[in-house]
Amino acid sequence: MARYFSLLLPGLLFAFIAVGTAYAEDTQATRLLIKRNAEFDKEIIQVSESVYTAVGYAVSPVSMIVGTEGIVIVDAGLEVASSQQVRADFQAIVDKPVKAIIFTHGHPDHIHGASAFMDTPDVQIWAREGFGHEQNTLEQAGIKIQKTRGKNQAGFALSPKQRINNGIAKAFWPKRKSGVFGAEHKIAPTHLFDVDRFNLTIEGLDLELVAATGETEDALYISFPAERVVFAGDNFYKSWPNLYALRGTPYRDIRSWANVIDQILQENPLAVVGGHTRPVIGEAEVNETLSNYRDAIRFLFDKTVEGINRGMAPNQLVDYVVLPEKYQTLDYLRPYYGNPEWAVRAIFSGYLGWFDGNATNLFPLSDRDEAERVAKMAGGQDKLGDLIAVAIVQKDYQWAAQLSDYLITLDPKNKSALLHKAYALTALAKNNLTTTARNYYLSSAILLRKKAKELSSAQQ
Image (cartoon, rainbow, N blue to C red; front, side):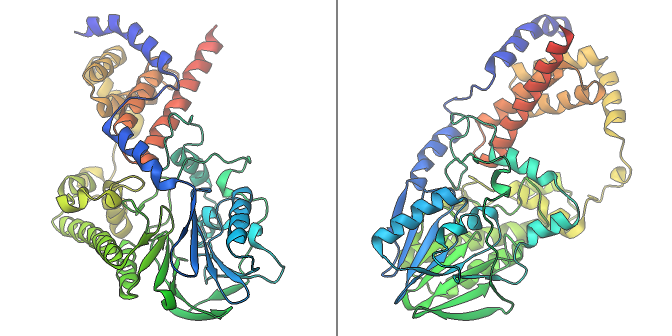
Protein backbone atom coordinates (compact mmCIF):
# COMPACT_ATOMS: atom_id res chain seq x y z
CA MET A 1 0.00 0.00 0.00
CA ALA A 2 2.75 2.44 0.96
CA ARG A 3 4.68 1.67 -2.24
CA TYR A 4 1.53 2.24 -4.31
CA PHE A 5 0.95 5.68 -2.91
CA SER A 6 4.61 6.57 -3.23
CA LEU A 7 4.26 5.92 -6.93
CA LEU A 8 0.99 7.87 -7.00
CA LEU A 9 2.47 10.87 -5.23
CA PRO A 10 4.11 12.61 -8.24
CA GLY A 11 0.79 12.60 -10.11
CA LEU A 12 -0.96 14.01 -7.09
CA LEU A 13 1.63 16.72 -6.73
CA PHE A 14 1.12 17.68 -10.36
CA ALA A 15 -2.58 18.08 -9.62
CA PHE A 16 -1.79 20.19 -6.57
CA ILE A 17 0.42 22.50 -8.59
CA ALA A 18 -1.98 22.64 -11.52
CA VAL A 19 -4.91 23.65 -9.32
CA GLY A 20 -3.09 26.93 -8.55
CA THR A 21 -5.70 29.58 -7.93
CA ALA A 22 -8.44 27.77 -9.86
CA TYR A 23 -11.54 27.21 -7.81
CA ALA A 24 -14.99 26.82 -9.24
CA GLU A 25 -16.59 23.52 -8.30
CA ASP A 26 -20.38 23.44 -8.37
CA THR A 27 -21.16 22.55 -4.76
CA GLN A 28 -24.29 23.32 -2.77
CA ALA A 29 -22.33 25.87 -0.73
CA THR A 30 -21.14 27.61 -3.88
CA ARG A 31 -24.66 27.70 -5.33
CA LEU A 32 -26.06 29.20 -2.12
CA LEU A 33 -23.37 31.89 -2.09
CA ILE A 34 -23.99 32.78 -5.74
CA LYS A 35 -27.71 33.08 -4.99
CA ARG A 36 -26.86 35.28 -2.00
CA ASN A 37 -25.27 37.91 -4.27
CA ALA A 38 -28.78 39.30 -4.81
CA GLU A 39 -28.65 40.49 -1.19
CA PHE A 40 -25.93 42.95 -2.21
CA ASP A 41 -27.50 44.48 -5.31
CA LYS A 42 -26.71 48.18 -5.39
CA GLU A 43 -29.82 50.13 -4.44
CA ILE A 44 -31.21 52.87 -2.23
CA ILE A 45 -34.16 51.44 -0.32
CA GLN A 46 -36.82 53.66 1.22
CA VAL A 47 -37.30 52.06 4.63
CA SER A 48 -39.90 54.50 5.94
CA GLU A 49 -41.17 57.98 5.15
CA SER A 50 -37.92 59.67 6.26
CA VAL A 51 -35.39 56.82 6.15
CA TYR A 52 -33.36 55.71 3.14
CA THR A 53 -30.70 53.00 3.19
CA ALA A 54 -27.99 52.56 0.57
CA VAL A 55 -26.95 48.93 0.11
CA GLY A 56 -24.41 47.37 -2.24
CA TYR A 57 -22.18 50.42 -2.63
CA ALA A 58 -19.42 48.88 -0.52
CA VAL A 59 -19.68 46.28 2.26
CA SER A 60 -22.02 47.91 4.78
CA PRO A 61 -25.23 49.93 4.44
CA VAL A 62 -25.30 53.68 4.89
CA SER A 63 -28.59 55.23 5.99
CA MET A 64 -30.06 58.72 5.78
CA ILE A 65 -32.73 60.10 8.10
CA VAL A 66 -34.34 63.23 6.65
CA GLY A 67 -34.95 66.06 9.10
CA THR A 68 -36.40 69.55 8.74
CA GLU A 69 -33.42 71.44 7.35
CA GLY A 70 -30.80 68.70 7.23
CA ILE A 71 -30.13 64.98 7.37
CA VAL A 72 -28.58 62.50 9.79
CA ILE A 73 -26.31 59.72 8.48
CA VAL A 74 -26.17 56.35 10.22
CA ASP A 75 -22.79 54.69 9.63
CA ALA A 76 -20.51 56.04 6.94
CA GLY A 77 -19.26 53.09 4.93
CA LEU A 78 -15.88 51.53 4.37
CA GLU A 79 -14.06 54.05 2.23
CA VAL A 80 -14.41 57.55 0.89
CA ALA A 81 -14.91 56.80 -2.81
CA SER A 82 -17.99 54.58 -2.45
CA SER A 83 -19.38 56.82 0.30
CA GLN A 84 -19.10 59.80 -2.03
CA GLN A 85 -21.35 57.92 -4.44
CA VAL A 86 -23.82 57.33 -1.63
CA ARG A 87 -23.73 61.02 -0.70
CA ALA A 88 -24.43 62.07 -4.29
CA ASP A 89 -27.32 59.64 -4.64
CA PHE A 90 -28.78 60.74 -1.31
CA GLN A 91 -28.52 64.34 -2.47
CA ALA A 92 -30.51 63.48 -5.59
CA ILE A 93 -33.34 62.36 -3.30
CA VAL A 94 -33.13 65.16 -0.72
CA ASP A 95 -30.87 68.16 -1.25
CA LYS A 96 -30.22 68.97 2.41
CA PRO A 97 -26.90 69.22 4.26
CA VAL A 98 -25.60 66.57 6.63
CA LYS A 99 -26.01 67.76 10.21
CA ALA A 100 -24.88 64.64 12.10
CA ILE A 101 -23.30 61.21 11.64
CA ILE A 102 -23.94 58.39 14.09
CA PHE A 103 -21.53 55.47 14.29
CA THR A 104 -23.12 52.24 15.50
CA HIS A 105 -19.64 50.98 16.49
CA GLY A 106 -15.99 51.50 15.68
CA HIS A 107 -15.28 48.89 13.01
CA PRO A 108 -13.54 50.39 9.96
CA ASP A 109 -16.20 49.29 7.47
CA HIS A 110 -18.72 51.55 9.21
CA ILE A 111 -16.65 54.68 9.80
CA HIS A 112 -13.86 55.15 7.25
CA GLY A 113 -16.07 56.82 4.65
CA ALA A 114 -17.12 59.59 7.03
CA SER A 115 -15.32 62.43 5.29
CA ALA A 116 -17.69 62.01 2.33
CA PHE A 117 -20.50 63.29 4.57
CA MET A 118 -18.68 66.22 6.17
CA ASP A 119 -20.67 68.88 4.33
CA THR A 120 -19.46 71.42 6.86
CA PRO A 121 -16.77 71.33 9.57
CA ASP A 122 -19.39 71.44 12.33
CA VAL A 123 -21.14 68.15 11.50
CA GLN A 124 -21.78 66.33 14.78
CA ILE A 125 -20.23 62.85 15.02
CA TRP A 126 -21.98 60.70 17.63
CA ALA A 127 -20.76 57.43 19.15
CA ARG A 128 -20.81 55.53 22.41
CA GLU A 129 -18.23 56.06 25.16
CA GLY A 130 -15.35 53.63 24.67
CA PHE A 131 -15.53 54.03 20.90
CA GLY A 132 -12.97 51.79 19.16
CA HIS A 133 -12.73 49.46 22.18
CA GLU A 134 -11.86 46.32 20.20
CA GLN A 135 -9.06 47.86 18.17
CA ASN A 136 -7.76 49.86 21.12
CA THR A 137 -7.60 46.79 23.37
CA LEU A 138 -5.47 44.89 20.88
CA GLU A 139 -3.25 47.84 20.05
CA GLN A 140 -2.62 48.67 23.70
CA ALA A 141 -1.45 45.09 24.22
CA GLY A 142 0.84 45.37 21.19
CA ILE A 143 -1.06 42.63 19.32
CA LYS A 144 -0.88 43.14 15.56
CA ILE A 145 -1.40 39.67 14.08
CA GLN A 146 -5.15 40.19 13.80
CA LYS A 147 -4.46 42.44 10.80
CA THR A 148 -2.81 39.58 8.90
CA ARG A 149 -5.47 37.14 10.03
CA GLY A 150 -8.12 39.68 9.06
CA LYS A 151 -6.81 39.81 5.49
CA ASN A 152 -6.99 36.02 5.30
CA GLN A 153 -10.50 36.05 6.76
CA ALA A 154 -11.56 38.69 4.23
CA GLY A 155 -9.85 36.90 1.31
CA PHE A 156 -7.98 39.90 -0.09
CA ALA A 157 -5.48 37.60 -1.86
CA LEU A 158 -8.21 35.69 -3.68
CA SER A 159 -9.53 36.08 -7.20
CA PRO A 160 -13.16 37.10 -7.91
CA LYS A 161 -13.87 33.50 -8.94
CA GLN A 162 -12.66 32.21 -5.58
CA ARG A 163 -14.30 34.90 -3.50
CA ILE A 164 -17.97 34.86 -4.46
CA ASN A 165 -18.92 37.27 -1.68
CA ASN A 166 -18.23 37.72 2.01
CA GLY A 167 -21.46 36.19 3.21
CA ILE A 168 -22.95 39.43 4.52
CA ALA A 169 -21.41 41.74 1.94
CA LYS A 170 -20.19 41.78 -1.60
CA ALA A 171 -16.51 41.01 -2.12
CA PHE A 172 -14.35 44.11 -1.73
CA TRP A 173 -10.64 44.59 -2.38
CA PRO A 174 -8.98 47.58 -0.66
CA LYS A 175 -7.27 50.04 -2.96
CA ARG A 176 -4.70 51.10 -0.36
CA LYS A 177 -1.81 49.20 1.16
CA SER A 178 -3.17 49.57 4.67
CA GLY A 179 -6.26 47.56 3.71
CA VAL A 180 -9.56 48.13 5.50
CA PHE A 181 -7.66 48.80 8.71
CA GLY A 182 -6.42 52.17 7.48
CA ALA A 183 -8.19 55.23 6.12
CA GLU A 184 -7.26 58.22 4.04
CA HIS A 185 -9.17 60.58 6.32
CA LYS A 186 -10.17 59.36 9.76
CA ILE A 187 -13.00 61.29 11.36
CA ALA A 188 -13.19 61.00 15.15
CA PRO A 189 -16.43 61.35 17.15
CA THR A 190 -17.18 64.81 18.46
CA HIS A 191 -19.90 63.65 20.87
CA LEU A 192 -19.95 60.55 23.11
CA PHE A 193 -22.67 59.28 25.45
CA ASP A 194 -22.09 57.07 28.48
CA VAL A 195 -25.60 56.14 29.65
CA ASP A 196 -27.83 53.19 28.74
CA ARG A 197 -30.18 55.31 26.65
CA PHE A 198 -29.48 58.81 25.33
CA ASN A 199 -32.14 61.01 23.75
CA LEU A 200 -30.81 63.00 20.80
CA THR A 201 -32.94 65.65 19.11
CA ILE A 202 -31.54 67.09 15.92
CA GLU A 203 -33.22 68.66 12.88
CA GLY A 204 -36.62 67.91 14.35
CA LEU A 205 -35.77 64.22 14.70
CA ASP A 206 -36.14 62.54 18.08
CA LEU A 207 -33.67 59.66 18.16
CA GLU A 208 -32.68 57.32 20.97
CA LEU A 209 -29.10 56.04 21.12
CA VAL A 210 -29.05 52.80 23.12
CA ALA A 211 -25.97 51.07 24.55
CA ALA A 212 -25.93 47.60 22.95
CA THR A 213 -22.87 45.54 23.88
CA GLY A 214 -22.72 42.52 21.60
CA GLU A 215 -20.37 42.23 18.65
CA THR A 216 -18.34 45.02 20.25
CA GLU A 217 -18.16 46.75 23.62
CA ASP A 218 -18.80 50.11 21.95
CA ALA A 219 -21.91 49.03 20.03
CA LEU A 220 -25.14 51.00 20.04
CA TYR A 221 -28.44 50.82 18.23
CA ILE A 222 -30.58 53.74 17.19
CA SER A 223 -34.32 53.85 17.69
CA PHE A 224 -36.41 56.26 15.62
CA PRO A 225 -39.78 55.92 17.41
CA ALA A 226 -41.73 58.31 15.18
CA GLU A 227 -41.42 55.91 12.26
CA ARG A 228 -40.67 52.74 14.27
CA VAL A 229 -37.30 52.10 12.65
CA VAL A 230 -34.30 50.62 14.45
CA PHE A 231 -30.73 50.74 13.16
CA ALA A 232 -29.18 47.65 14.74
CA GLY A 233 -25.54 47.95 13.72
CA ASP A 234 -23.62 44.69 13.53
CA ASN A 235 -25.66 43.00 16.26
CA PHE A 236 -27.98 41.97 13.43
CA TYR A 237 -27.62 41.03 9.78
CA LYS A 238 -28.98 38.14 7.71
CA SER A 239 -26.54 35.37 8.64
CA TRP A 240 -25.54 33.36 11.67
CA PRO A 241 -23.82 36.15 13.63
CA ASN A 242 -20.07 36.40 13.91
CA LEU A 243 -20.05 35.52 17.61
CA TYR A 244 -16.37 34.69 17.16
CA ALA A 245 -14.18 36.31 14.48
CA LEU A 246 -11.34 34.30 12.90
CA ARG A 247 -9.06 37.32 12.93
CA GLY A 248 -9.14 37.23 16.73
CA THR A 249 -10.89 39.59 19.14
CA PRO A 250 -11.50 39.86 22.87
CA TYR A 251 -14.42 37.66 23.96
CA ARG A 252 -17.70 38.85 22.52
CA ASP A 253 -20.46 38.79 25.15
CA ILE A 254 -22.85 36.33 23.53
CA ARG A 255 -25.48 36.51 26.29
CA SER A 256 -25.55 40.28 25.98
CA TRP A 257 -25.77 39.97 22.19
CA ALA A 258 -28.98 37.92 22.45
CA ASN A 259 -30.37 40.34 25.03
CA VAL A 260 -29.77 43.25 22.67
CA ILE A 261 -31.86 41.54 19.99
CA ASP A 262 -34.61 41.09 22.58
CA GLN A 263 -34.35 44.76 23.49
CA ILE A 264 -34.68 45.78 19.84
CA LEU A 265 -37.83 43.68 19.61
CA GLN A 266 -39.24 45.60 22.57
CA GLU A 267 -38.90 48.81 20.54
CA ASN A 268 -41.80 47.40 18.45
CA PRO A 269 -40.13 48.23 15.12
CA LEU A 270 -41.76 48.18 11.71
CA ALA A 271 -38.32 48.00 10.11
CA VAL A 272 -34.80 47.03 11.17
CA VAL A 273 -31.68 48.16 9.32
CA GLY A 274 -28.86 45.73 10.03
CA GLY A 275 -25.15 46.41 9.95
CA HIS A 276 -24.95 44.39 6.72
CA THR A 277 -27.39 42.95 4.16
CA ARG A 278 -30.72 44.52 3.23
CA PRO A 279 -33.17 45.94 5.77
CA VAL A 280 -36.00 43.82 7.14
CA ILE A 281 -39.29 45.68 6.57
CA GLY A 282 -42.74 44.81 7.89
CA GLU A 283 -43.84 44.24 11.46
CA ALA A 284 -44.56 40.52 11.10
CA GLU A 285 -41.31 39.80 9.27
CA VAL A 286 -39.27 41.83 11.76
CA ASN A 287 -40.84 40.03 14.74
CA GLU A 288 -40.35 36.57 13.26
CA THR A 289 -36.80 37.23 12.08
CA LEU A 290 -35.49 38.83 15.26
CA SER A 291 -37.28 36.36 17.53
CA ASN A 292 -35.65 33.43 15.76
CA TYR A 293 -32.31 35.24 15.74
CA ARG A 294 -32.46 35.87 19.49
CA ASP A 295 -33.73 32.40 20.33
CA ALA A 296 -31.09 30.64 18.24
CA ILE A 297 -28.27 32.52 19.97
CA ARG A 298 -29.77 31.81 23.38
CA PHE A 299 -30.22 28.14 22.57
CA LEU A 300 -26.58 27.81 21.55
CA PHE A 301 -25.36 29.62 24.66
CA ASP A 302 -27.55 27.68 27.07
CA LYS A 303 -26.78 24.32 25.47
CA THR A 304 -23.05 25.07 25.56
CA VAL A 305 -23.23 25.93 29.25
CA GLU A 306 -25.21 22.74 29.85
CA GLY A 307 -22.46 20.72 28.19
CA ILE A 308 -19.73 22.58 30.06
CA ASN A 309 -21.40 21.70 33.35
CA ARG A 310 -21.42 18.07 32.29
CA GLY A 311 -17.65 18.23 31.99
CA MET A 312 -17.44 18.39 28.22
CA ALA A 313 -14.34 19.76 26.47
CA PRO A 314 -14.61 22.00 23.37
CA ASN A 315 -14.42 19.17 20.81
CA GLN A 316 -17.15 17.31 22.64
CA LEU A 317 -19.27 20.43 22.93
CA VAL A 318 -19.15 20.99 19.18
CA ASP A 319 -20.78 17.58 18.71
CA TYR A 320 -23.21 18.12 21.58
CA VAL A 321 -24.54 21.57 20.65
CA VAL A 322 -26.68 21.10 17.55
CA LEU A 323 -29.12 23.83 16.54
CA PRO A 324 -32.74 22.72 16.17
CA GLU A 325 -33.79 22.04 12.59
CA LYS A 326 -36.10 25.08 12.52
CA TYR A 327 -33.08 27.38 12.84
CA GLN A 328 -30.83 25.47 10.46
CA THR A 329 -33.29 25.88 7.58
CA LEU A 330 -33.74 29.65 7.90
CA ASP A 331 -31.66 31.46 5.31
CA TYR A 332 -30.97 34.42 7.61
CA LEU A 333 -29.46 32.02 10.17
CA ARG A 334 -27.31 30.04 7.75
CA PRO A 335 -23.58 30.30 8.59
CA TYR A 336 -22.68 32.61 5.71
CA TYR A 337 -20.38 34.71 7.91
CA GLY A 338 -20.22 33.43 11.49
CA ASN A 339 -20.31 29.77 12.44
CA PRO A 340 -22.04 28.07 15.42
CA GLU A 341 -19.07 25.75 16.08
CA TRP A 342 -16.77 28.72 16.61
CA ALA A 343 -19.27 30.30 18.98
CA VAL A 344 -19.35 27.13 21.11
CA ARG A 345 -15.56 27.16 21.39
CA ALA A 346 -15.57 30.89 22.14
CA ILE A 347 -18.04 30.47 25.00
CA PHE A 348 -15.88 27.76 26.57
CA SER A 349 -12.63 29.73 26.32
CA GLY A 350 -14.33 33.03 27.15
CA TYR A 351 -15.51 31.73 30.51
CA LEU A 352 -13.02 28.96 31.36
CA GLY A 353 -9.88 29.80 29.42
CA TRP A 354 -7.57 27.44 27.52
CA PHE A 355 -7.64 24.38 29.82
CA ASP A 356 -10.26 21.86 28.70
CA GLY A 357 -10.42 19.97 32.02
CA ASN A 358 -8.53 16.90 30.79
CA ALA A 359 -5.45 16.36 32.97
CA THR A 360 -3.57 14.94 29.96
CA ASN A 361 -3.60 18.43 28.50
CA LEU A 362 -2.06 20.24 31.46
CA PHE A 363 1.41 19.99 29.89
CA PRO A 364 0.95 18.54 26.40
CA LEU A 365 3.76 17.47 24.10
CA SER A 366 5.22 20.18 21.91
CA ASP A 367 4.13 20.15 18.29
CA ARG A 368 7.50 18.75 17.27
CA ASP A 369 7.52 16.02 19.93
CA GLU A 370 4.05 14.92 18.92
CA ALA A 371 4.93 15.01 15.21
CA GLU A 372 8.01 12.85 15.81
CA ARG A 373 5.93 10.25 17.61
CA VAL A 374 3.23 10.20 14.94
CA ALA A 375 5.82 9.84 12.17
CA LYS A 376 7.50 6.99 14.05
CA MET A 377 4.16 5.29 14.55
CA ALA A 378 3.46 5.60 10.81
CA GLY A 379 6.83 4.03 9.99
CA GLY A 380 8.77 7.18 9.19
CA GLN A 381 8.20 10.48 7.41
CA ASP A 382 7.93 8.86 3.97
CA LYS A 383 5.21 6.51 5.20
CA LEU A 384 3.45 9.46 6.84
CA GLY A 385 3.49 11.18 3.45
CA ASP A 386 1.87 8.10 1.94
CA LEU A 387 -0.88 8.24 4.56
CA ILE A 388 -1.58 11.84 3.55
CA ALA A 389 -1.90 10.76 -0.08
CA VAL A 390 -4.30 8.01 0.97
CA ALA A 391 -6.42 10.51 2.90
CA ILE A 392 -6.61 12.79 -0.13
CA VAL A 393 -7.61 9.96 -2.46
CA GLN A 394 -10.30 9.02 0.06
CA LYS A 395 -11.39 12.69 0.25
CA ASP A 396 -10.62 12.76 3.96
CA TYR A 397 -9.32 16.30 3.62
CA GLN A 398 -9.37 17.38 7.26
CA TRP A 399 -7.25 14.37 8.21
CA ALA A 400 -4.93 15.05 5.27
CA ALA A 401 -4.42 18.63 6.47
CA GLN A 402 -3.73 17.53 10.04
CA LEU A 403 -1.25 14.87 8.93
CA SER A 404 0.44 17.41 6.67
CA ASP A 405 0.96 19.64 9.69
CA TYR A 406 3.03 16.88 11.33
CA LEU A 407 5.35 16.67 8.32
CA ILE A 408 5.63 20.44 8.01
CA THR A 409 6.50 20.67 11.71
CA LEU A 410 9.29 18.14 11.23
CA ASP A 411 10.48 19.67 7.97
CA PRO A 412 9.18 23.14 7.06
CA LYS A 413 10.83 22.76 3.64
CA ASN A 414 8.96 19.58 2.73
CA LYS A 415 7.41 20.65 -0.58
CA SER A 416 5.22 17.57 -0.80
CA ALA A 417 3.67 18.27 2.60
CA LEU A 418 3.15 21.94 1.72
CA LEU A 419 1.36 21.04 -1.50
CA HIS A 420 -0.61 18.24 0.15
CA LYS A 421 -1.92 20.67 2.73
CA ALA A 422 -2.69 23.33 0.11
CA TYR A 423 -4.75 20.82 -1.85
CA ALA A 424 -6.58 19.62 1.26
CA LEU A 425 -7.43 23.18 2.35
CA THR A 426 -8.72 24.04 -1.13
CA ALA A 427 -10.92 20.96 -1.07
CA LEU A 428 -12.24 21.84 2.39
CA ALA A 429 -13.13 25.33 1.16
CA LYS A 430 -15.29 24.04 -1.69
CA ASN A 431 -17.97 22.57 0.53
CA ASN A 432 -17.91 25.17 3.29
CA LEU A 433 -20.66 27.79 3.33
CA THR A 434 -18.99 30.07 5.88
CA THR A 435 -17.20 32.64 3.72
CA THR A 436 -14.65 33.59 6.35
CA ALA A 437 -13.62 29.92 6.59
CA ARG A 438 -13.50 29.57 2.78
CA ASN A 439 -11.39 32.70 2.52
CA TYR A 440 -9.02 31.54 5.24
CA TYR A 441 -8.63 28.07 3.70
CA LEU A 442 -7.92 29.45 0.24
CA SER A 443 -5.64 32.27 1.43
CA SER A 444 -3.60 29.76 3.44
CA ALA A 445 -3.39 27.46 0.41
CA ILE A 446 -2.00 30.30 -1.70
CA LEU A 447 0.75 30.94 0.85
CA LEU A 448 1.63 27.24 1.00
CA ARG A 449 1.91 26.96 -2.78
CA LYS A 450 3.98 30.12 -2.87
CA LYS A 451 6.39 28.69 -0.32
CA ALA A 452 6.67 25.41 -2.23
CA LYS A 453 7.38 27.30 -5.43
CA GLU A 454 10.08 29.39 -3.74
CA LEU A 455 11.71 26.22 -2.43
CA SER A 456 11.71 24.72 -5.91
CA SER A 457 13.27 27.87 -7.38
CA ALA A 458 15.97 27.90 -4.67
CA GLN A 459 16.92 24.31 -5.48
CA GLN A 460 17.32 24.96 -9.21
